[in-house]
Length: 398
Ligand SMILES: Cc1ncc(COP(=O)(O)O)c(C=O)c1O
Image: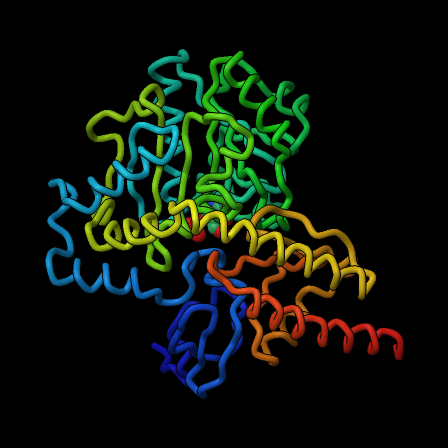
């Protein structure tokens, strides 16, 4: 047995992390154990839709913690019934299964589609997913993902996923066989660098899947819960998918995810799906507090305006520094850097007390809290402006 030589050694080293310990968060800010403050435009990777430790979530958790933590998934509890009802009332779906992570919700969606294939499509089991897509880190969701870096990992893959190209309907059509049961996509590919499916493509996909009797599964783990200016992204396209997964924002910072399905698609039978913590009242109480805020028309309207402001400020910044396009929707945006300098910018921003994310070497992704203020956006733009000015001066000298 080895002895930990520093406080980080006892945790598995699964990703590169700065050796900084975060101790407190409030709204748009995080503090580390030295008292340094950071302006956060990652927010737990699009998780804290109401900012860090919002009072409504903290209060809901505290109140629920005193009442009931978990009665067991063998029994009903109030918060999960209420949250399921609220999600159904606010969407085109009829039933909900709660999960603890996005990957688990997607795993459930894959199982549900296969069950549907068994019951209604002569055992069809293949799901068409997309190059560049990201659906999680379980074996099946890694196999469903179209992330290049996943390709050599953990062989053999779970079979039954065929990859089409985003916004290319023909590439989908060519993959449809008698074995196909569903098409699954992120309306905006987040991890790939914020690449949106067009509304037209989503419409065409809905028509195509209907024509072939296939299920349409939208992975709204990143785009859902108001992130792109509607409660759910599919609303922008005016379509009604058969299955949707939610994660990240739904818990406002706590581990909660959900699998939603229409009556036709919700075909699990007893024994098919479950889990010890699924739908536990503590997390569902947080989910209710979040949904209550985010579903308010005034909240969504304000976040749309803030998103447009962030977009125009990024466009101005891009023009000043000769960078590329700003893409995305609402408060899920990316700036094309045109050069593979994302990681260097993120590191310098960290030093300067600004938390940014670079999902691809040549892009920065912005996913602040949905209630981020214009002042906080202006502060982030100033910080990034200074870093880009320094970076281009260094390039000129080199
Ligand atoms: C679109 C999408 N699907 C699934 C996941 C996986 O969610 P989790 O990390 O909660 O398992 C993510 C996480 O980044 C995601 O962005």
